[in-house]
Length: 427
Image (spheres, rainbow, N blue to C red):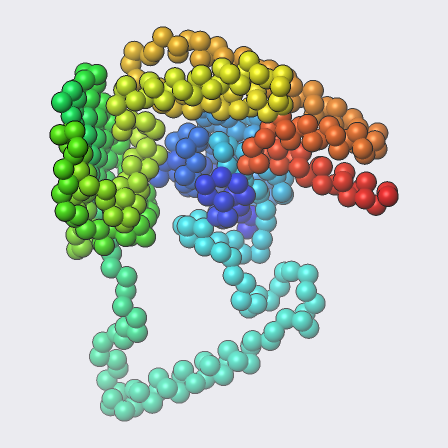
């Protein structure tokens, strides 16, 4: 069965089996493959498999879908195809036995029990059949002896050799964060009901802003959240002693979680919470952002505009200095995207918003043009076997796209290593 392996991004190392039919990739828990990448859309793309034929289709995502470095709406995928979505890179591969998509990134383990496939000669494989027959025979004899000793009445009760892990469902959550002073009250409230309804509310009195979003979460998404909260240490959170704010304000975080028959509850008031408490809060906020598609709604409007202004000023400076360093255009586009995230929930948009959009478009178009020209020069030098020139052009190409997690940088790096090896052999 073919599988997809994440080679770059927040989920690096995870592998997902690719069954027959359509598999959706995105941030939503309803997708067949759920990734944590914040630059993905909730439903980003579909990968369709019919036998040995595999294709990918973009679902009108915000940041597009790229196959082997080229943006595409629909494309056929061959073995080893490189898919780039958001900040993640995914490779298509085939194997004798793929991992389950629900294994949450579990490593693939070959126990050597297969009878076919692979390149190793038949004699090199261990012959487990005699051992398996011996174990089976011992099991039959032991079962028969037990049956006779009990007078042939059969087993009275099933034997449990290891306690089962406690069920974390149904999951119910109430999380509130309040920041208040003499001038403003800011409140972030997140709730997850036992039937899977997620809701987030924002109240910002100074800005007159009230935001509310909600969505129905699939059971698998809730199970995944429960496992993440358990790993974060939700059952070890504690309430620290209340502190006193130096400016007379209030900072308060309160978490209540009911997971199956277990309960976790803690409050931190004017005091930094313990590491497990902070990890649980971060997990909840990340889950809320992923599911509802809002990335900055937990901050006051004034802070969001300030962060966006800083990001845009940085983008503008980088764009003005695009002739000084090859990577400045790429960094300018990234800074503009960062500013866009901050302003997602801000209405009305600030005065610099229109100029920011214009800068982002201009920087993106010029980056695409320069990347195409530079890649053409590098490929031409390779085709002409001008290895020294090819190495120089590829180094510039890597500087133009400085992010090592970007597929374009990875492609240039792979070609550069090949060219450098040819230069060494030539010497």
